[in-house]
Image 1 (cartoon, rainbow, N blue to C red):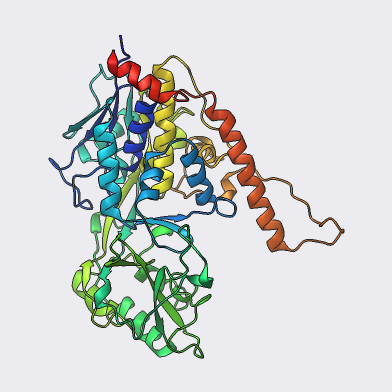
Image 2: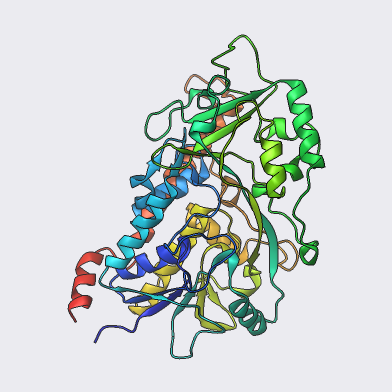
Length: 475
């Protein structure tokens, strides 16, 4: 007899990754996705793992960046999200960015063709049926109201929530390349070796000041019933950043450092707007860091003030939507199970991690933990020295007050991981500079993480997953 299936609710990044990991461990899985029968405010297709905001998975270098380390860990654990991302990569300097349509279609195809995966379209309203003895809820920040209310009633907790914003996308042919130029910051080569992965639009001081004035004056979307909901700092609308000070944008998404105007190399721009390739054809480019809550008419007017974008054609305008997440330190155990009903696990952004890769990583962990439990081989969460384990620690117990007042969504960062001691002097006794020591610490933390991950993975179901999957499918 094959084991009963595990049910995964939500076909986003986390749910897709969880389902993949369960199936690769040799366990049947039913993946429930309500689209297209019921849509959301942010999605446009019925594909699994649709990217609704940026198309970037951010930095890809595991030796010096925490999210790059998370990439490396997931690749070593057969992540479907990273595998499909690598196949559909588009130029993005040192980042891993993807053709969003090709990426989600690839994830959908892989899960649809796996013999142990069943995809069911339709909304799960209320709590899952009692005979679903193992469930992973990966419904993301746009959890349907019916399910959210059921979870809230079960836990007795109010939902926490925050605003998230989407950046506009413009067509390449509408960008004036007599003004703009291609260059990655500091000419840094990305995973594909390219050094001209971004399009840069320069501003002088007067243009920048006029642009900030227009941002501040432009009409914005407001939601009175949500007016006490905070923004997530990692995805602030650009006009909210402008409200924090006139120089904020110059030290944020519009910083001019590491760039030389190819048309006027003798002139240093006061500020620079960058665009990143959004699809494999290279015909669509998104405005980096330009999440916005400006009303659509104002976006077209204000963003065309940017030199090089005077005749911009917008394939998609920006937007604003509300995200929700659990007070996970109070509600979830180290297995990502709901303390009030352990048959329910949670994964993805709803747990209080922020970012595509972080959400998928928690889906990966939840899927492996659920599969191990189903196969009778209990598995602990990854050690806190790994990037994935650090995220689990953050959402299940990384707060001094147990999450009663301080818990907020967070991206992966080195501050979530235990520090390592590195030499302060070189072989000749000379004191090492701060940048050299920092680089050494990050490399040492990455090496430790990958070694500890390998030890953890060796105890997990799925080491001979292909054989297991074939055996269960035949039975």
